[in-house]
View 1 (cartoon, rainbow, N blue to C red):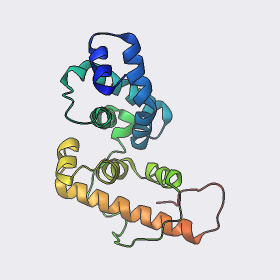
View 2 (view 1 turned 135 degrees about the vertical axis):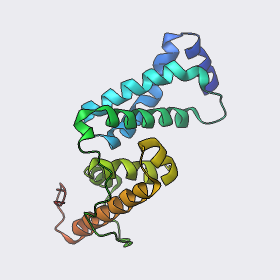
View 3 (view 1 turned 120 degrees about the vertical axis):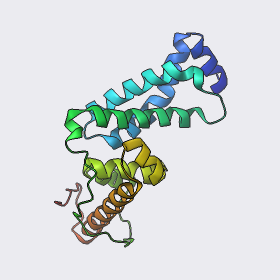
View 4 (view 1 turned 120 degrees about the horizontal axis):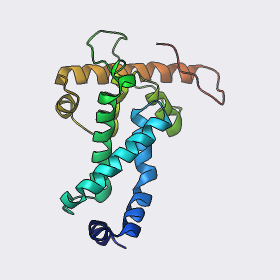
Length: 188
């Protein structure tokens, strides 16, 4: 079944089409959710909330863009809303302009695989992690991030620069240290 027919069948209440839509995108979107959280349980909660919104708003999909991209945007917004609402993340989701680390424009040689890099990103403080994911991974501008998170554009730029600098320092440490099977995050 093609994408357009799948959406139309879902809108008619066809349960098998709804299952197919979920099965097609759930594992990919779970990865998106996991990038914003500190546990798989939280990522699964976000995924469920996100897909409820997908099915609730599927009538708004206009076939002008890729269905996966449309779903991804809903999932990312669900993740951001979850972080804002969750008392567990609220305390850590700070967007201060306090300088914790020097900002660097270094570009170290990357000797990590994608999975190791993703794990480093997940270990960033939640504010850094959120801004980094929104800008570097999702492609949002700092103006858009500011609107989404309710922060100034400059704060978004600062958080991104600090996240990037912290990742660079961790990568340099990783590249200079002994190679082991597991990687422990340097202390911040």
